[in-house]
Length: 297
Ligand code: GLU
View 1: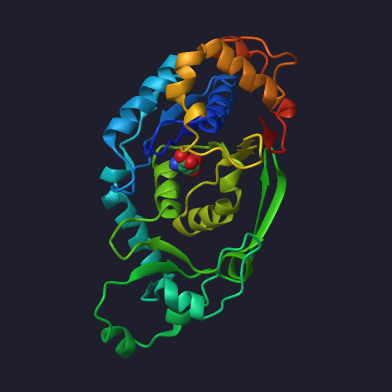
View 2: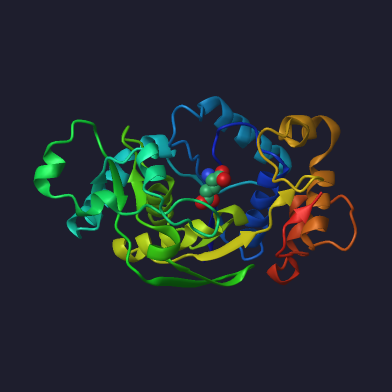
């Protein structure tokens, strides 16, 4: 039985790209008679709100993208994340880190392919007496091995990443106590029995970290489908700042059928740009039809 999920961040109104990923997650599950879990990813209390979460639920319902259960929102799941963290600590894979952004810049770490700095490991080797001298609360990092994580994505194909060389020791909990997305998402997907993850391609390079965490925590690895991103006419990625393509504007000018029909057409599911309800698209859906390259609108 397929268990999929929608995992929106309630930091603003959904935009067309969010709807695109949600539609494909819904179709993939409904085409297999599976179930869908909705989870609000509100780890960061300063960027998310219950009001946005309510609007996202209303927008999904308007589109006809229903769900079978709702998981407790991430903001209330700290005890579960703490338990996962303790398990990793017991395996001696976690260490405290006091490096500031300035320290990291000065350390001139090599950069991953996407330009993000790789943590140089400064705090990994601190001795207990050096740790004891620190006065600020640390963030917590996951020690990663010099090992390739390999998986086959249902859309993008084979993907490989060396954790030490292309990613580096990554953050599990921020210094202010907020748990990191990587740990929360793995803990939540496992708790909900999620075995299929459909999401935007911008998260493809998070997946090796998540698979590594699943292995350390003894969780099963879901099937992954990383779907293309929608790009604005000038080539940049849609974001919640694109007000003309957010659900507030789209609900004024379109209907659920026109929106979903258009998205199914640009995805490669429909041959013509014609209105279609979510239910009408189930019979048309197949992952073989879905394009893998990002899509310009
Ligand atoms: N909360 C993330 C987002 O809204 C999605 C995370 C995920 O699907 O793993 O982009």
